[in-house]
Image (cartoon, helix red, strand yellow):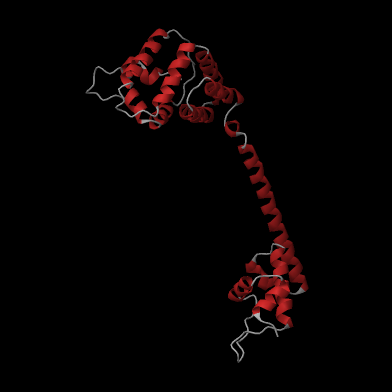
Length: 252
């Protein structure tokens, strides 16, 4: 007769696994003997090996008891059903792995190549990563809602990045995302944006409509400083604000 530890060793499982199978009702738990120990016979070793073999093969524990007591015909049918279920799960796992591998491409999973190149160019020009990420999210929304407008916006943004004055201003805006809304530099930045806009009124823009409200809301949510910059308090009439074209024409 075997102790629970010896039983577990014979079947190649842990004592904890044996107790778990007892709890599930897969393996009968013998009564304690006079010395207070539970003793197992050879039949328990065979049953435990069968349970372990089925579990290792991927049979759900909830179905192991069914298979242990099944007729040969029913056993074959059940195994075929379980195999089909495992095959379906394997297909799902392969699809998940494929999607995970695509995630390694980063922004390329969500955006056209031309847009990704713009974002990479902005990083190379020194635009802060926080603003690049905000813009990336805007591009994702634009691509999903009005994909036909993307080529026009790509052309406009590419032309803007050819302008050193725009790049310098955009870099400053990217740093301003981390400024507090009371930062004394904000009025000067607002004036710079207004000046840049007035100097570039004739610059061609995209003709396609875009979900501007949604995009602008996302940009404002990214920074308290930008909310102050682009949506100033009405009690501060001296502040250059949306009335000067900042909300609708802030550099994109």
